[in-house]
Length: 243
Image (cartoon, rainbow, N blue to C red; front, side, top):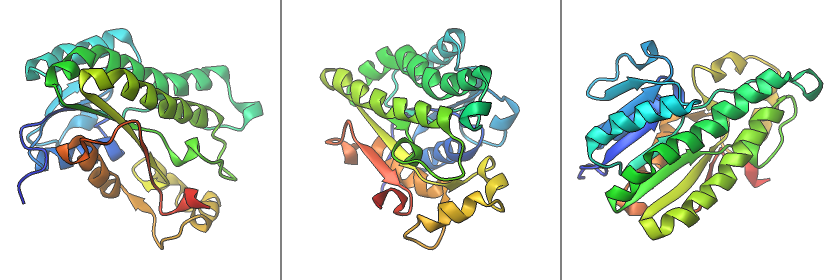
């Protein structure tokens, strides 16, 4: 099979760890030229054959640095907004500082990067934005104190529809992926906690999600195969949100 992203120029944020890193690697394997960005320069190590950039995407200055680096690509065919910072706490214990950290890390990053790269997406003539909502944008989960996270991912879900509306006349598509519990460096700490009983009770399949599971969908949404798909949200959660 030909490489599904051959010739595509992709920017992947949050590429130092977890889903973002796996997407960057899978995109490169499918023939894309990838610019991977993360706030943690050290975390970007080991991404062979991938251009990397360290920048704080919760700030306008950081997004501008990314846009300047992406301009060297000539255009951006795929933007994957995987960067996120999240804090969890029950509502009475959630500090305003942690609320703001989460909303900046999950909402501001998506807005600032998309705005900064919009002209380069237009230049593509057939661009795709891939955002990340979450199963938690669709349902609450007992034992997960996620008031800020649900707000952030609910916002991304709504923002994606607006990007699709405004991007349509510019040949820019926008879709979101809504992962359920996915095993990453961040979520591994929860594998032996009571929370997992609630997570596993919602699954229709007998395993947890992997970053590769998410990467396969991200490849489809970035490829020309999904040319008639925009404004959609894709649940990839082992059936957790189906009931």
